[in-house]
Image (cartoon, rainbow, N blue to C red; front, top):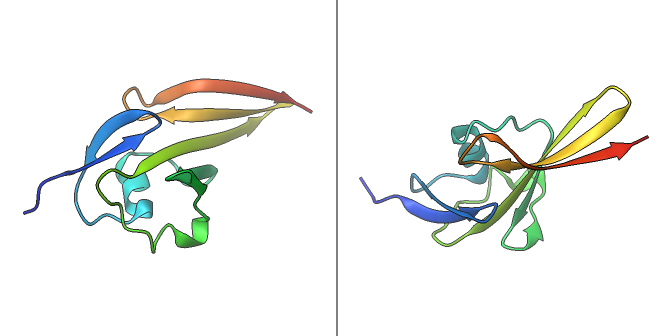
Length: 93
């Protein structure tokens, strides 16, 4: 078996199994994919390419999870170390 691949997710170095597609990495991190946007090496990665993009050593990801409810919509940056949002924005309607 190959060694783990080191990537940066929301500014934190993480090791993930080799050969993962971005969609598989999101699932492995336990992130619900329904309302997620991903910046991949400083470019937005369309959801249609998540299954086609293989995670490579040194890749950099910013993962943003959108949460709606009530009269406000929130946007949070997923923090893989704590599994809680590391930054939370409230957008009033």
